[in-house]
Length: 103
Image (cartoon, rainbow, N blue to C red; front, side, top):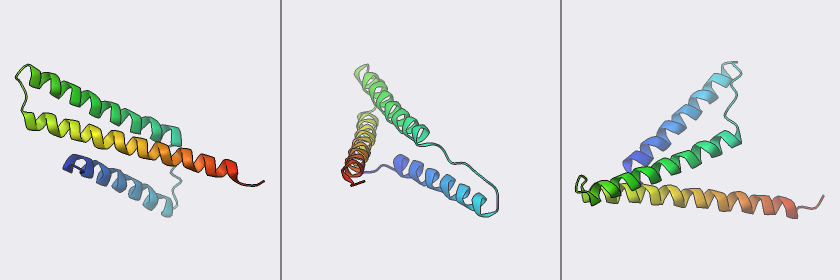
């Protein structure tokens, strides 16, 4: 289940991509981020979600956080990790398909 935060982030990323596409049509050369930069950002966001989840869990253990905040943080981390694993599996499958192609 996607949370409003995940949906808002996805919408913001889509809006940025659309703005870049509009700039290219206007005659301006705009270079998009490289694949490695996108990968690094994605892994970084998953790590941040994990850190937030850990911080919320520790705060709950010390009595400073609400259970709902912890559950939400853990669910966000679960969605982020599941998405990352899914993308990784697709990239590996694409690589294997390319390697099977005849020359």
